[in-house]
Image 1 (tube, rainbow, N blue to C red):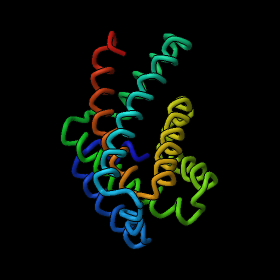
Image 2: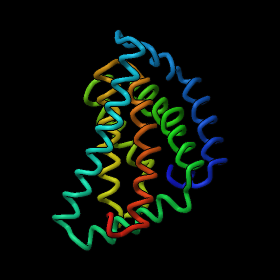
Image 3: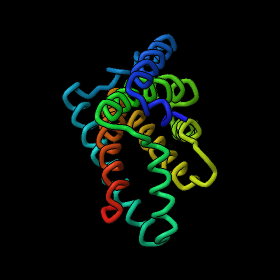
Image 4: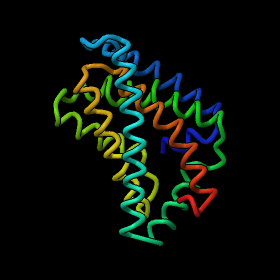
Length: 191
């Protein structure tokens, strides 16, 4: 669902504003700087976590490609066309902003804190995050992937006590990930 909002930068920007304002109303941004870590450390951890999530995406892709072969590659290419549509740099940037300023405050800043600040909250909000990234049953593997990412971003929030860390990690992940994903879909030899 969220992927479709990111196909046009104007809609993604509007969704970012609306999602950010709703999250603000639910007090999500009170956790923005609640960490005992310095702002510089939070930014560094967020950047490192975003890079690590991209590396893990690459590793998962390789595992699936080697174990499931052509079946996976066909699903990957079809999923990529559905997720990316005709996205270009404006959509990559606004998609990353939406992840940072709307999705993370909603899922980690509001819902995770409201449900439970422990592993139960991380798992529940990871499932909700994945549900909002659901496309079709034939893309179940990629839904599972989104759930793992949602759990990862939740663990970052719980582990650091900072909403800023998963905001940076998720934004970086989406901006860079969309571009890499697009390149992989265009050049099937790369995928």
